[in-house]
Image (tube, rainbow, N blue to C red):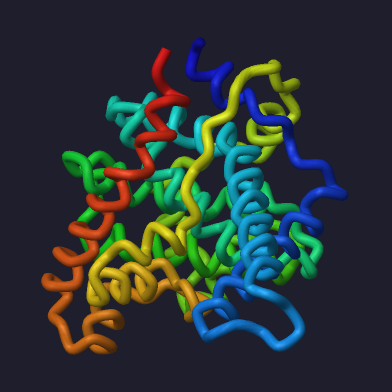
Length: 280
């Protein structure tokens, strides 16, 4: 099986499926929390387990259906940087999972549009971390990552891709500065994304990816906190190395090392699915 056919194996989400799955994910998270807190008066433990499992399956479906988006971004980045496509695909998987975690289906933004920014950001950060692929100083790479996070938030709020001027306003920078920053990323055109997402899926097998909360739960408390703050889980936006350090009383260098340790631990799990998709 080729990488492309493997990624296309999962049927696309329909417009009707998206809100149903999103609500199932939310319900699953709430059910899991209720079980951790000792149960819920109106539901048995068995019922809560069923809701939690349904949420987990919805999560897997959401992620698998969007792997072709990760493959597109990773493939283009690999062609530019000559880095291993499998490594960049793994980075993109982490960005995709962050997008699923933060997506608000009630705002009307399509998930693919919202997730594109998170996947690009994750792949771009991964490229920058491998042999200086983007030839960016660390501070510039951090600025690009932060800008992509703000861009994703604006996309969801506006229901469309923000203009450079709108993004510049949100960043408190000039339009020229913002254009120059975004030029480093060389993102995939939206029309290319649409073409890949519209491709008919072959009747192949599927490979489930783990739920991000389950992955994070397996880390030590400090590493989990660092990754949650750096990815924006629960905060609404990702924090810089410096801001994370201030929150946890660590230096930026210490934050970077803890973050790298956590990402390495997550990659030891995520590639089990990623390798399946990219081998062949």
